Length: 135
Image (cartoon, rainbow, N blue to C red):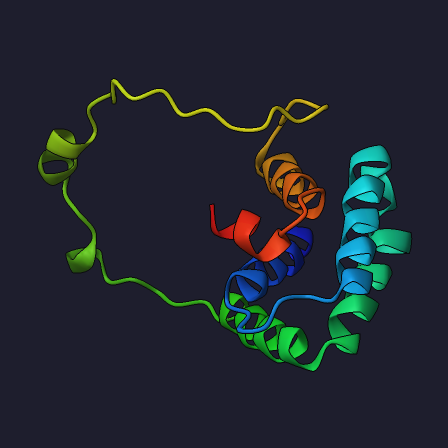
């Protein structure tokens, strides 16, 4: 979950930026995405420290990242009364006729971690990363 939390907080912080990233930041984030795609097992040793350096160097991004990271760190117990019942879920759980299309990643998702990695890879490779993450 730590990988997910770091990447999710980063993606959420990107969506919330008021000012666009610099070309240097965009290039560095692209390198992070390339590294995550090429060597996902190097996350703890190499990729995560580089991403955290990029985040720390941008005050606005860092502030938003810390906010989201702390929020993801907080666990909240949802009372069972607030959860929908099976009868309430059934009407909205119908298959959609709309086909969702997106960028096809090089590697297939094997789980939740890989899906988040694929999102970071696609976002990092776009020209306008702040806009791409909002899509």
